[in-house]
Image (tube, rainbow, N blue to C red; front, side, top):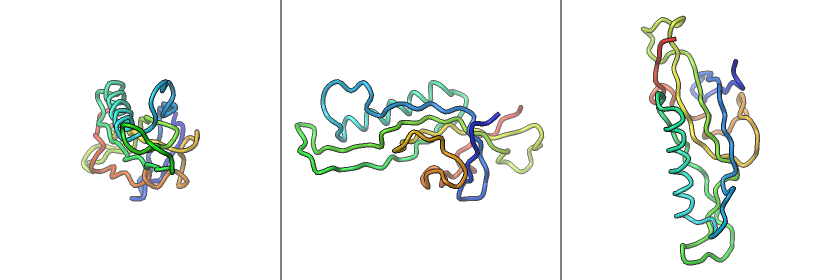
Length: 143
């Protein structure tokens, strides 16, 4: 059973089978959001996805970055990522047309950031998430 379906810009329908959400800056005790901290956050989330789903390719949707008019410190200007960090396991029909559609599917694990605590769904999903090039990144597997 899927959590939701997303309509990609290419027309392919993918289903979200597992979703992990966390606060982007949850547990941050010192410092402030800046480029070096954000790069660590993004790399850490990507590594977490790779460890959690080792048999599936992982794709990072580059996050948007905000630059509020706040004074930075020693690590540069304040840079803010969207507040919710997400890892999603997605499935769809097989990419390779020669594979039996009854026996094969394709899979991709996606890492992205979003502003609200919503499950992405349909054509209302974030445009960056909907623009995933599934045929290039997903991996076919046999049921």
